[in-house]
Image 1 (cartoon, rainbow, N blue to C red):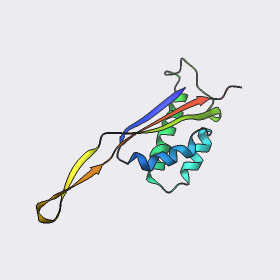
Image 2: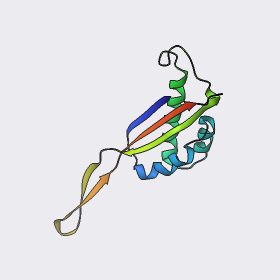
Image 3: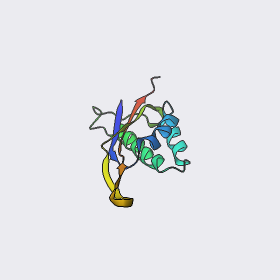
Image 4: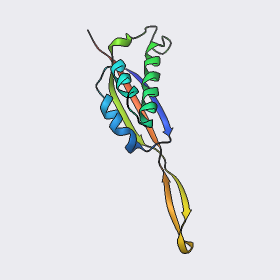
Length: 116
């Protein structure tokens, strides 16, 4: 099991979750191909997290001296959680204020090696 996360990504979790649903359960190489042709900014962020998890699978210091087969890696978990919300205020008519919520998210990816 190989993990990677991107914490405090400056994008709403609502925009990244449909992309995570696209790649969940797919082979890692196939997931990268799917995301490469998506026009969304969240696809670039998710793509980087998957590449980082693949890199973690190849690091022998983290994996007790062995490297995983890159073609046999599957996206077991692709989770997007909400992060802290940055709150700002915009001035409106007659001295009132309108809140602006700048949302952040945490992107978690777990890869597992196929047995066989």
